[in-house]
Length: 78
Image (cartoon, rainbow, N blue to C red; front, top):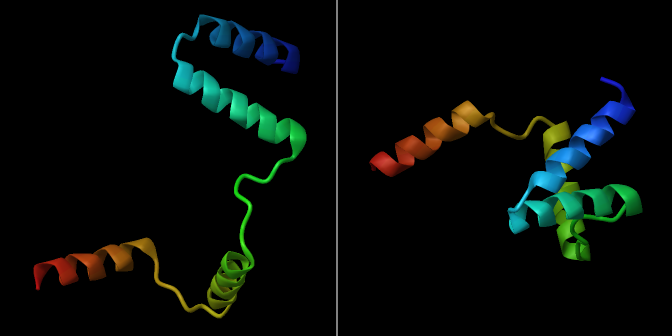
């Protein structure tokens, strides 16, 4: 499917939509893509926490989802 075909198909799908919430989501997605907007502006504290978390991941200080689920199940049993 070419880019032009894809655009046509998307426009057709949007024209058929009546779900206002979904239309708003599509609009916001397109607005972000076109403007290069930041999804969520972060405070300095939030940026600091993100940076700290990224550093922990780089150092291997994390657990995978399966291990986290196992720990949660163990906590819930006690």
